[in-house]
Each structure stands twice: as structure tokens, then as C-alpha cells.
Image (cartoon, rainbow, N blue to C red; front, side, top):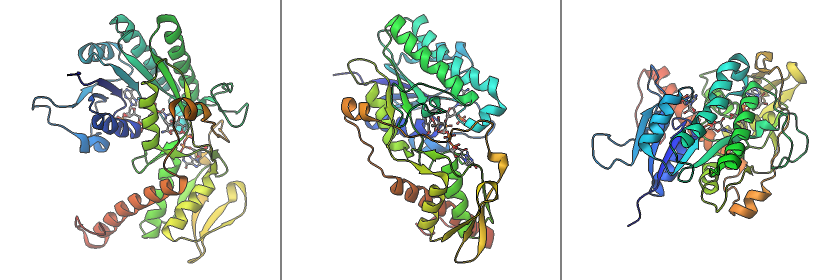
Length: 364
Ligand code: NDP
Ligand code: GDR
């Protein structure tokens, strides 16, 4: 009988980590995840996958760790002896990277080097395949539209610069040491478990709360920026596929369709039955609910970035041809799923606000 494959996921408590762990468990893998120590529980997204570590044969195991600690990474990789490592851990918020540039470089850039070095130090170059979570932010100030694997990079934030180091060190270790190492250059991907401060989730969460009178206004930054938004569930499938090929290569993963932040607001509002009407331009722009006349969206310059990535649009032809991949979930389905999920949470909060209690079956 074949032994089950063993995977190690850094960033397992994040959006992609949670979907990928679920996918790999379904495929029969033994999955190890690295989680950070936190003063509060930080495993919400993977609690559904939890397996009691006290029983034998648990298929999902967690280890404390951090990308800034190479001793810890070496020890975990030595213990786990993974067939595949998915390096998803990162300080992943572009705006926050301007506030914490040194930490971001350490975790997102050098952190990747630490894992690759651990593979070498432990002599696992021929055994362990490595996936690096690269990003469309590498294209930054875009040099070509749409962006594909050969489009030159021009990073525009400390986050993107750190990820650029991680991209090239992955390529270098592949070429220098023959490690099966790939970069997935993934364009933005979202879901109901997206972090609440990324723009899509911020919008769906706020509009759901505004709909139920739990919040008055949604403050946003650059409403004109254009993104190629896909669904995280689709994209983790690609991360796995990239490690199943005959030879390691880098791939762009994107939908090839672009929307603005304002389009996203409109789509979420439509889903909630809010009739958006827009006034003015730039920083003065306001969005009203036409049915009530209430101003519910305003631009707050505090959310502008020192250098912005105005437009991203991916060309995933290579992935389509070589990995046989096309995204399954449309933009409208993505928005609808996120809105429904956030409306449910808002309904729970509404009950607590009105009556001081909730019930489990309300609006299920
Ligand atoms: P999230 O921010 O949701 O998750 C990031 C994960 O990394 C969390 O588990 C977080 O832990 C962990 N983490 C952060 N810093 C460290 C550290 N120093 N050591 C160990 N773990 C750490 O990101 P996503 O799931 O959205 O993205 C996954 C990866 O893909 C990231 O590397 C991101 O940069 C990249 N990416 C994401 C895209 C997207 O659109 N989602 C597009 C392209 C690339 P904790 O839960 O404790 O905070
Ligand atoms: P991004 O995602 O920077 O593309 O990085 P984010 O959702 O943060 O921003 C997308 C665009 O929306 C604009 N924007 C706002 N953004 C946030 N967060 N909050 C706001 O209030 C707001 N108003 C407007 C931004 O300026 C930007 O143009 C994400 C992350 O997941 C990265 O880790 C990943 O590498 C890239 O996607 C691909």
C-alpha cells in the first residue's frame, strides 16, 4: 500500500491555508500546519478541520512556529519530513507593509530563504517539493497588460519588494540545487474567510451591517483601483497542481477579468438590495443609498497608499494550457457568497443588539 503524502503548510491559519488544508485532507494527505503563538485563539478558519492530537493517526497536526525563526523551521521540517511544503505564511497586507517594512522583509523575504535553506541543510532537495506564494503585486507599476509570466516586475510596496526577493530566491534554489520549487503568481483571491481589512471583505461586511442599521458608513481609499478578483477555493487547487507536474515551473493564476473597487461596492450593494448612487469625483466622492437618501460610502484619504498599484489584470494562458485549469467561480458568485456570509454574521449581531441574545437557527 502507498504511504499517504505528507504536506507542510506555513500560514495554515490564513485564508488560503485553511482552504488548502481542507483540499489536501480530502485528497488523503497527512497535513501539518505551522501556526503562530497568539494571545487569543487564532485557529477560527481551521477549527472545522481540528483533530484531537491525543488520538493515534491524526491526519491534521499543528506546530507552533514563525518564519522569522530558522531553528524552529529546521526542527519542524526535520520532524515532519514533508513531501510538499506550501509557503503561504506572510505579512500579507500591502498597506500595513508600509508601517512595518523591516518585519515584512524578514518574514516574507528572508522567511522564504529560511525554508529553502532548511530543505538543503536537511538533505531533502530530492524529496521535498516547494510552493512559494508569489503575487501579482510583483507587477506593481505595470509594464504590460495583461500580465503574464514574462512581464517585467516593478514592485510598489515593501510587501511586494519582499515578495520579489522570495520569488527570485525560489527560482535560484531551483536552478542551483535542483529543488522542485515553483512560484504561483496569484492575482487577488477572496472568499467569505478573507481577512476583514482587505477591501472586498471590508465592503461585504460593512454593507451587510449598514443594511441592518448596525453601522452608518463605509470609509474606503482608492475607489478607482482595478483588480482581477478570483475565489480562493479555486486558487488553492492550482497551488496543489503546480507541485504535481513533471518539472517545476512558475505560473500566473488569474481570471482575466477586471473590476474596480467601486464595481465591487456596486455588486455587493445590488446583492443586498441597496441602490447605490454616486456623486462627485476623487476624494470627495460619496455613495448614497438611493432608496433612503443616506450617504453610506465615503472616501477617506487615510486608506490611500504612499505608492498605489492602480491596475492588475492577469493572463493565465500558461496555467490553462499546462495545468488544464480554468477558474470555476465567477465574480458575481464570489460577491454573492461573501455577502450572504457577512449578512448572516450581521444578523447574529443584530439579535444580540436588540435582545441581548441569539439563537443558533436564526435565518439558517
Ligand atoms: P492571510 O493574511 O489570510 O494569511 C497569512 C498567514 O500567514 C496567516 O496564517 C498568518 O498567521 C501567517 N503568518 C504571518 N506572518 C507569519 C510569520 N512571521 N510566521 C508564520 N506565519 C505567519 O493571507 P492569504 O491566505 O490571503 O494569502 C496566503 C499567501 O498568499 C500569503 O503569502 C500572501 O502574501 C499570498 N498571496 C495572497 C493573495 C490573495 O489575494 N489572498 C494573492 C497573492 C499572494 P496569523 O493567522 O497568526 O496572522
Ligand atoms: P491588495 O488588496 O493590496 O491588492 O493585496 P486590498 O484588498 O488590500 O486592496 C485592493 C485595492 O483596494 C484599494 N482600497 C482599499 N484597500 C483596503 N485594504 N482598504 C480600503 O479601505 C481600501 N480602499 C481602496 C487598495 O488601495 C488597493 O488598490 C492583496 C493581498 O492579499 C496581497 O497579499 C496579495 O499579494 C495581493 O492582493 C495580490
